[in-house]
Image (cartoon, rainbow over all chains, first blue to last red; front, side, top):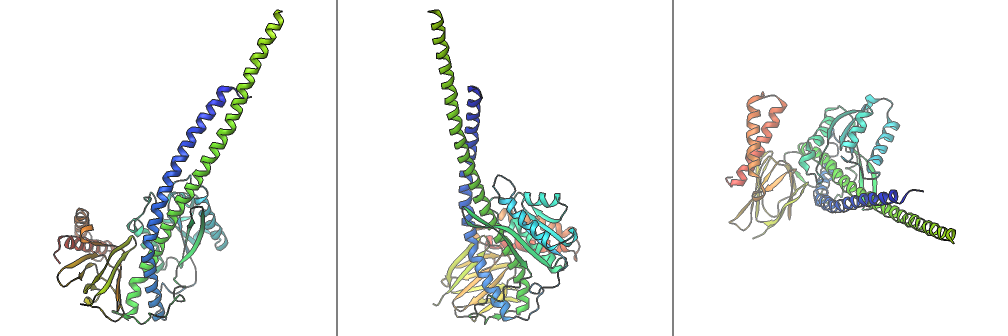
Length: 287
Length: 136
């Protein structure tokens, strides 16, 4: 049986750990609030831009813009959004597992795909696995602005237009609620599904100078916005899952402290009982 | 006087939202003015200032870095990747960006990709400074 002092040491170290995890839980909770607000601020922009894109794309359905056409797939790109740090429960591993499963199902060799990584965990994982990581962004702030990821978004869209790859998928964790996040795999390019979501009511736009010229400006902006939206979504899930992970760590620590205190008391009582028995025994021997 | 609603939205949130009498913007093909009751129209924008005449006298100015303009009879929406009202512009940062872009322009060749990029960032920076100082 562990000595009294050993148990006491374990209790105090567990207490210190639980103080840290509780603090981290509260920090994540407040960051989650901000991240939710950021995601909300983005909604009107995204809603507007998809309205206009679908109105124009359906108005000029046969425009043949390269970003709207699916072509035979020789090479695929994956954009993976993870966090920079761990201690977020299964947040990173869920996203990475979804990507590796997709890669294993679709490809036989490393030459058939490339990876764009947002977040250190994802980048390190794919670099270590020998995947071709074209570009990565790490150490993003907790509340990223559009300018922070403009470079990588522009590159991801630009290389599709160049024909470097023929499909772009995006994997991130979608924020459903504070306790639920879903890994989402989404096809960003080519934009095959927007023409079907047309409302039809406002398709009578005048295009200045022409529908094609506007699509030229609009579609890259739309695709980049999709990526930014996913990043905001991912950030909110990151904070939510870190909060949940830290909460369960704190709960586990208090359970542990409870059972350690119980065995501490038991050990102390045993020691007292033993002392009394010894004294009584000593007195009895003297009589 | 009739008014039209103007919304300027960026990925980081709404920038401008107000009823105006007239809007003047730089589209890719030239400068246009939009009055209430305009036919539905979509046009890409140049880097430049968008001017909104509110009550015949005052003019609100917003610096817009590209994006596009969507007009409906009762509403105008501008979707840009970056836009600032004059008071929100970080003018020291814009001046630094202008200096950097000018240096890069002096170093690179005309047909380089970097040249185009530097040219664009120079235009964005001068646009911001102009809007900040109010000389449009």
